[in-house]
Length: 179
Image (cartoon, rainbow, N blue to C red; front, top):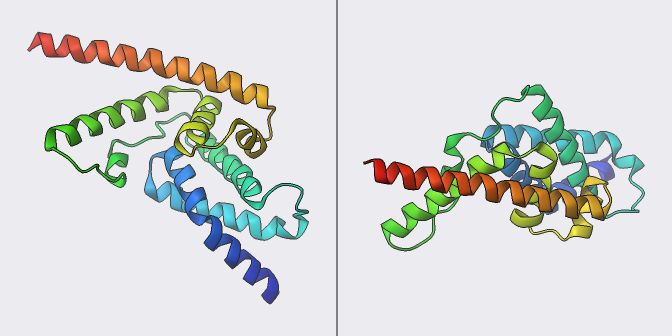
């Protein structure tokens, strides 16, 4: 590998590793899978970097590669569960009273379970828009889809999350009264 290519890859890796890693971590819910997929993203980048023409931002291009790697991973899992129950251990807990921390973790766990029930396309869009906080335009560029599709799928994903979380809340209340 030419030295300038190795240097470019190194700089890109340093600049974008965290964003790509956390995107893949949110998608899979498993640290090991996210780490493997990040390696796959940068392995693919190594092969195709000479074709990069600069028409889109490098970060956008990397997220597009990461999206394809995540979808490939999803297909390989054959519709198995994508989020493990231990993903919360990777999240930093908030400072505060133990009761507040417990409630926050329970809410995060409910959201995590609800996210796993979304269609993969909706899940990716919701993660990019609300967890990674990308704009509609940036999300559309990353996924190479029209902005209207981002808006529609995001809206449908949020409605589905509301329905799922509403049902989970009703079940939790019913369980409390059953005790």
